[in-house]
Amino acid sequence: MTRTLVPRSHPEALQQFTWDAPWDLFDGDRHRLNLAHECVDRHPADATALRIQFADGRRAEWRFGDLQAWSSRFANFLEAEGIAAGDRVGIMLEPSLMFYAALFGTLKRGAVAVPLFTLFGPDALSRRLHDCRPRLLLVGGDAERWSATCPDVSIIATDALAARLAGQSDRYTPDTAADELAVLQYTSGTTRELPEAVPHTHRSVVTLMVAAFYGLGLRPGDRYFCPSSPAWGHGLWHGTIAPLALGIAAGAYAGRFDVQRLLEALAAFEITNVAAAVTVYRMIRIAGLAERYRLRLEKISFTGEPMDSRTFEFIERTWGVRPCGMYGSTEVGVIIVNYPGFAGYEVRPGALGQAAPGWEVAIVDGAGRPVARGQPGEIAVRRKGGWFLVKDRGWQDADGYFHHAGRSDDAIISAGWTMSAVEIEDALLMHPRVREAAVIGVPDELRGQVPKAYLVVDGPGPGLESELQEFVQSRLGFHEYPRHVKFVDELPKTAAGKVDRKALRDRAP
Image (cartoon, rainbow, N blue to C red; front, side):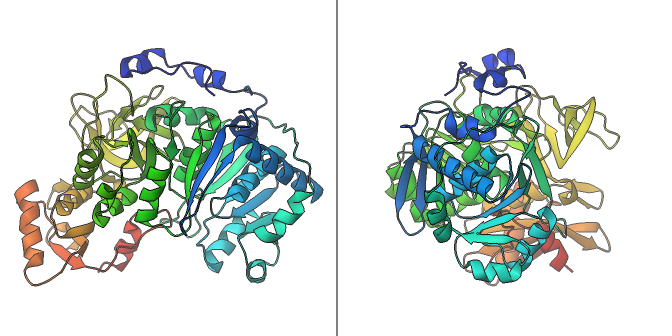
């Protein structure tokens, strides 16, 4: 549980924050710290640690004592198998007691956990395994199938693993340096032939507290849920490690995603704080099921991409809560937040938020110089004496709120006009027949580039294309509309659920 009182107001958060303060929350220090101990072992054994909704309708809860015992058994199992500190352990499991036991048992042992998406096919999995070269891979079943794909890796299915863990001791004392490697987290991989494995040390849990407090609004007493897969950064760090490090139960979803199952979980577990990808909230809106469930949501957050105004308004109208986005990069963490639950802060629709405590954020020009408020440029954060670009365009309003203007390669320059793909998408999503929208720039002989929209709509038919073009023009201006429209059955998505714009660019003429 937290040992220092987190400020309850936005002004206090800015005045009181220091980078030393988060260290006071943990048993470890800058020299010796173990992530599993901080998330699991130091909390009361009888407190709830996990709440899981399964796709088949089952729900389950486990306590910290369960997690302490099973993660220790797994650490002892690894030691018996000759898995040493620094060795990689691949974990390709859905959220379950065994997943969390393996994750934290690996960290207790001092080995390196490599969470892997359960829907990876043989090619995607083999590329990642060839890159990180694990000693062991855990799978949910059919170990023989994966053994044929990955002959150089020891592969164990969970049914066999449970029996092997039963005989291990339920005690294990971890001993790791704060700067030792703890996790290799693969990105969803839309811009590289081989997705990047981002390294995280045990001390990453300290920096994570900025996102935990100011991006997620986590507080003792919260009943928290995050349906994102722990194979990805949001699900692992924000959905799992952040709450557990604070002694707050982690809520997770296992299996094929279903809106109704998620709503059932939020109601049954009496969730008050939920964090999810924008796609999840949009699916809830489209499903039309939200009003059937009496939810107690007090804080709602999202990350990964901006939220369209139609979904933002739906959330506020349905639950009386303004959703709070947070924004950052893999390299530096969360740098812009919306302070969920903090007094004295106004969440503004369409804005990314304001700089998180401890970070200096600015909009810079092509030469890396900060620009005036209201001027577009690259979002950058002060790091090691210089401005680090986070590869997104944006602008800052007069009150200090940052606004997203698309990825740096999503800016569309047409006949001298710089257009925001995000802004055009948002306008399209306001139309009642548009379910999903993605906009990219495509070559045009006259204008250089023009916007092209890929749309999932209800009932495409004659005249809808021109209707949508006029609809956007009426909201954004005569020049800023999709000159090309293509209706599709679905938009390509990355494994993390984001729209894969690279795939759209690759298929565009």
